[in-house]
Amino acid sequence: MDFKQKHMDDAARHVAFLNDMSDSIHNIEVKERLRVLANRINDLKDMQVLFDSGERELDQLYDRYLPYLQTIILSYQKLEGSWNFEEIQRVRGMLMHSTEQLMDSILEIKRILPQDEMSMANAEKKAMEAKKQLEEKYGKTN
Image (tube, rainbow, N blue to C red; front, side, top):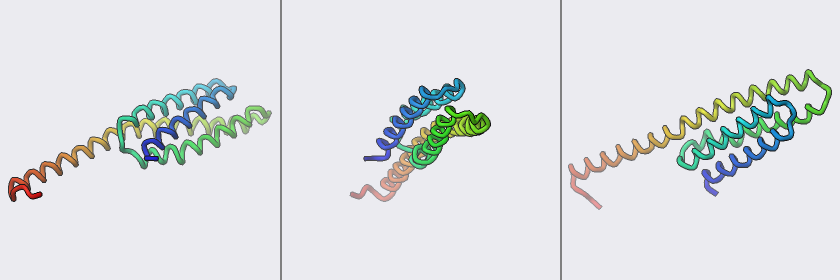
């Protein structure tokens, strides 16, 4: 499986998880935040179809950051059924902070993806121009 397909599958898996958790969590603010994050990941997935770059950033998002968030979400979900209000508030704060950071990271990745493609295209264009100049100067060789 290539990296692009892996990232697409990872995105779909994380979106499904976030939507499932949003349905099972009681706090309205957390539910909405998870839905917004799922939508942002879905938007990123749609954008990934167009671009082949950003592997490192996408690997970090899907293999490190989102699994860490899943751990926090699962902890929060378990705590919601308890009477430990202080711990619920503490974990909710972690959850809200982590989701905010992830949404910022996703925006940054969405900004980077087209730039990487443009940089690669510019590099290819410069290489072609240099090749053309060499061919004109020294004659075409095959």
